[in-house]
Length: 343
View 1: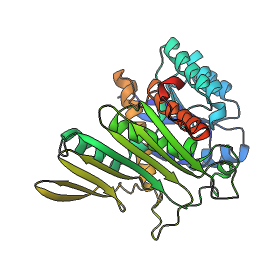
View 2 (view 1 turned 30 degrees about the horizontal axis):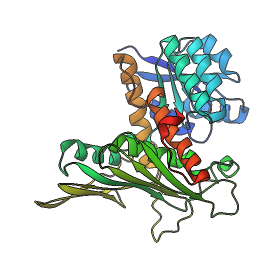
View 3 (view 1 turned 135 degrees about the vertical axis):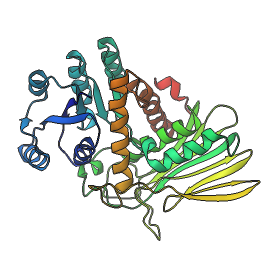
View 4 (view 1 turned 60 degrees about the vertical axis):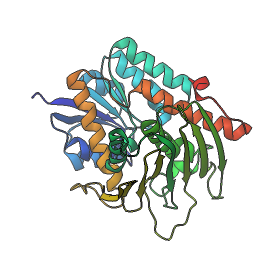
């Protein structure tokens, strides 16, 4: 099997996880990296033995001509970089949030579709092993047809120490964390036809909202609640666990603390430990997310080799991003919003 050579743009906080994961993806390797910060470029280059180091993304892509590019920068830079990759016919996997505006996101999808190159969004929460286990139970039909679901992420973990920019934006939890939970809701329950949202800022040291509660309407009688908080002091800090509750007409499912999956039907209850694998380079409590990075990057490479559309393609992620925009619109107006109007 020929190894696919990749290039990484952005050597910041989270990109280190991506570099570790690329080292475990069969048939793929990062051969060049880029960052405008010399210190970060050197640190990642030295840590992973990458000799080809660039301060300019266009120079790197034109000289290296990689088989794919991993864009691990902040959202404001994504459109220019994705359009650059598309112009050079280079498949791209792009960090979330996919784009700061729907217009940018649509333009990115259109650029890659016109160029005929794959575009995947690094939307990794649905790739967590615990969430995949929930999806498996749903697909098996064990609890019948779902009519209620809840996707919950509540914590007071200090995310600002590693990513201080999160405290500076006018938008925070819905755009940064809620986008993951909303995507999980789409993954488990299907697309939403309406969303009602309330947000609040509890922490006075940040600019954006740190609490959000969202009610979603799905097909049929299915309703879900997506709630996120970085202002919740729990007896046990659960970061970065996502908890899930689902009620169906034949039973119920609970993904609880400590990655404990419980399924209850008329035949009784069964329990399963769906804890993520602690990879050799991973560390608790981040190992849940770190494992999902490996799984999503494997999927991306498999799709490149097999000519398949990635599950979290740019086109698919437009629907998640539309939910984010609709949530902010609902919170601002007090109205229920159809996310399709944001597309």
